[in-house]
Length: 101
Image: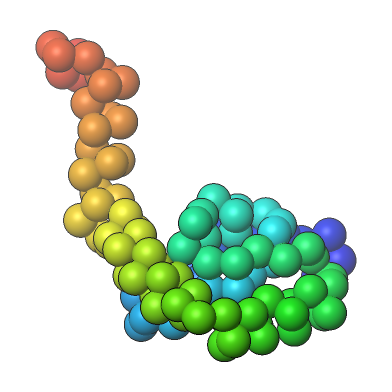
């Protein structure tokens, strides 16, 4: 879709959870989701994408490092983590007294 940017990156998170190093476009929310646990390339740049994929395969230790960082970072996106974050935000919003009836 023209002008559409990825807003979360579920495929990236699923790949990281499966132990696959991430190579993603540096657009939308993908840089935030990938963080240091993957490689980012400019959008619409197939040469940069190819170079990054080759780098993951050829650079000694890169696959293992990205895999370890990716599997560690996805815990942030577990259902338990998301629920804890949302509940914390709600509790801070209503304050220590709780909601007013």
